Amino acid sequence: MADQSVAIRYAEALYSAAKEAGLLDLVLADLAGTKVALESDTGLVSRLFHPRISPEVKVDSLVSGPLRGRHDLVRNTLVLMVRNGRADELKEFFRTYLDVHEARSGILRVEVSSASALSAETAEAIRQKVAEATGQPVVLEARVVPELLGGLRFLIGSRLIDGSIQSRLDRIARGLREAPVAKA
View (cartoon, helix red, strand yellow):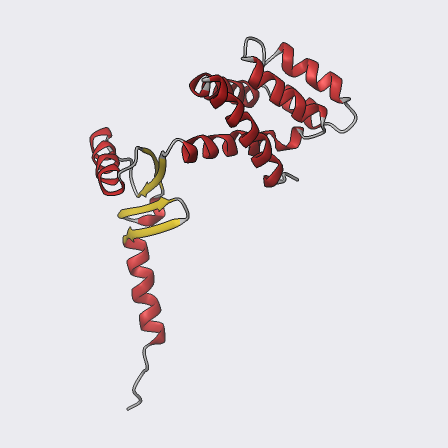
């Protein structure tokens, strides 16, 4: 089972090393490419998680596959994780590194959910409005959630702003259930 504190320690260490070396963008791109390569190779993922395969065989599979051509900082971090028996932390590590990178770079990630796909123009307008309101650069992640029926739901960090029709209907239903009924 993945331990988020382990992923955080590795992510923060890699971020600090990348910043010191002036390689933040390169490391971020290499991690994204490595993640995509891992996700597309189910055989490698199976080997990485198999308890009977030695850490050295796992490392060799990584180095000769998804880590080929990656910067030493990325390669060494992931190899260290696998050698230390932390292959099961890799998925959490990729997400955590992105979170650390964005937080330390002052980037705000906003998840916007809607009942249907947002047009590129609408998504950009929302991104700009949030950036103006917060004074921070914003990365907007749009999701389609048909159950919302209409309206928008924003997740900014751990704060949820729900302006969906579904949440309004839920509030009305809750109010009706809680309203006292007069007996005739």
